[in-house]
Length: 79
Image (tube, rainbow, N blue to C red):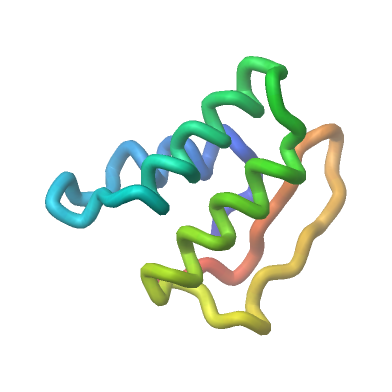
């Protein structure tokens, strides 16, 4: 379960180097931009959710945005 942009960033940093591609890089860049205030948490959530779907960590019906103190959340992320 990923509950914030910061947690998504930590998850991405632990992602295996050999499995990092353009979608991974996009999600990482978006999370970094959101943490620095250059992008909204919602936009970063969308990028991270796309990464999770493409890598089959997340099914299409599993991602539910939950508002919370300026951070977007992605629930039910499975490894």
